[in-house]
Length: 275
Image (tube, rainbow, N blue to C red; front, side, top):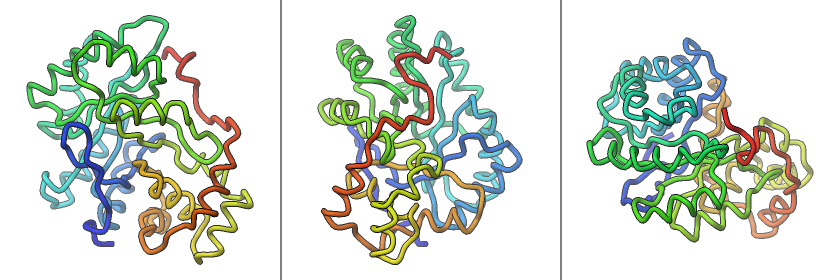
């Protein structure tokens, strides 16, 4: 697919991010290189990794061998909970592994709310952005109360909040808070690790448009304005997940998938997880 076919979202700092990117959660480092190579060949230009995934080096190898210009790529990585006190060191380590001088988006991976250390960490991320080590800064797995605490600092508002979001867990309060603060919502686990693909509403929408259930769910996300980062290590599935721009779900189909919300969380709860 022509990468130009993938729409972009303009973040609150004027940076543009492809609306559909490629995630590498739980992919071993060596396999990550092959998967990212397949993704770049398919037309993805946004790659999402994290320090704790242990595969930043694998991403870096794929980027280096791709032959693509750096300005054509959008690279996201994340600061792990154990490194909240020293994000500068952590980001430099991530950059070394990625083989880059700058990432496009750096996220605090979890708020770890047992303390409020994320507030000082956020101010450190602001400095890292000013130093040019990341173009944009944001958060991941932040609830409305965490977002409001950052906003109360009176500085930079996060550009992105990356949260678990799929038909079975729609995180509506967090989406509302993101919109109120001008933060883009990005969905991790957008397919619920496959748990929603057999739901009748998803299968009916897919059948109506002659597409796979995963494609119907990704289209549901995109039409509602979210950024999505599906993961796969299978080249055919990687390509299929990107081929979602030739059809539109009807309002009735969108509503039917909306109705699947059932607190179907697959990962930790942000209010309880402290790393």
